[in-house]
Length: 366
Image (cartoon, rainbow, N blue to C red; front, side, top):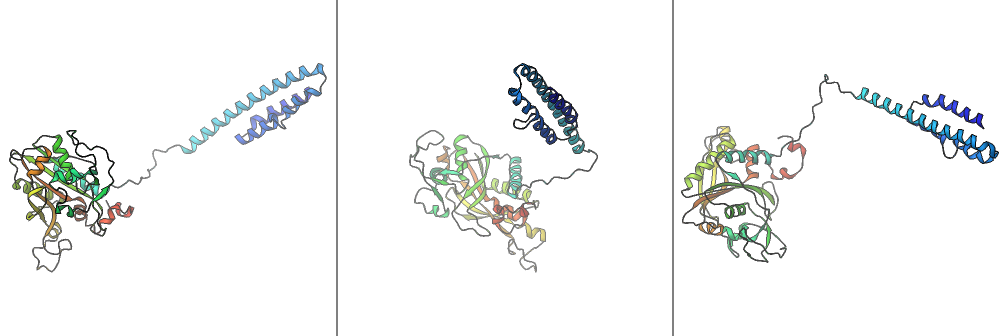
C-alpha cells in the first residue's frame, strides 16, 4: 500500500500543474481527495484491513500525502485565478485613444423648463418662491380667502374632498380652529399666500408655483390635475400700475418679444377690484398679423390678437385680516395663471394630456 501512495503522489505531481481551468482542477481534486471514490480516500478506508503493525506507518504516509495534495491544489488554484484576472484585464482594457460612445441623456419635462425660467424672471424682480401642502384644509383653501361656507363662489372650484383624520388642526399661531375641519386637495395655490403671510411680516414679494386639483372632465385643454403659478406683492404703496408693469415685464421676457396687457373687470372673492389679464398674442406678433382682415388667421387667438392668460386684483381686506395684517396699513396685488397653458403657448403644444402621457417621443423634443 505504500507503493500505491507513492504512485498517487507521482501522478498528482504530474497532473495538477497541467490543469488549465478551475473545472479541470476540481475534477482532479475529486479524483484524488473525493469523499466517495477519491484514490487517497480509498487507501485511508482500507487501513483497517492492514496488519496492526503496518497501520501507523501507512496512515502517517497517507495523511502526509493528503496535506501535500491540498497545498498543491491551493497553489494551482491561486495561479489559475491570477491568470484569469490578467487575461480579463488584457481583454477589457480601455483604449483611451478610441472615440467614445455618446450616452443618451434624459430630458427635462417642459413644465420644469418653463417653471425654472419663470422663477428666474421673478427672482430677478425680487420675488421669492414659496411652497405649501397639496392636501389642504377648508380654512386655508376657502375661508381665509374670503370664500366662507355656502358662498356661491365655491361653485367656481370643483373640489376633491377628503375624509378628515379627525385630529385637531392648528393654524400657524397654534390656536385650535376646528377638530373636524374638512381636508381637500387644494384647488389653487392661493393657500400658500395665506400661510406665507402668517409667518412673514410685510413688505413681501412671492410667487407660489405648484400643483392643484379640480374635479372636472379631461379633454385637450382641461385636466383634473394642473399647475398654477400665483404671485403676491404687499407693501404700503402698491397699486394696479405696479402690477401691470410687473406682469408686462414678465411676459415680455418669457416669450422673448414685447408683450402688452389689458385688464378686464372680473370677480374673484379674494381681490377687490378683480380683473382678467389679457396679453397680446405672441404668435400673431411672429407672423406679423396686424389685424383681423389679414388673410392669415392665427391658430392661437383666432385672429383676435389677445389671449386671456391670468386672473388678478388688489388683495381684499378680509384676506389681510385672516393673515393678521392691518388692511389700513398695507395693500397689495395678487395674480394667478395656469402654467400648463403658458407651456402650451410657448411650445405650441395642442393637447394638455401630453404632459402626463409618459410618451418619450414627446419628452425627447425638449
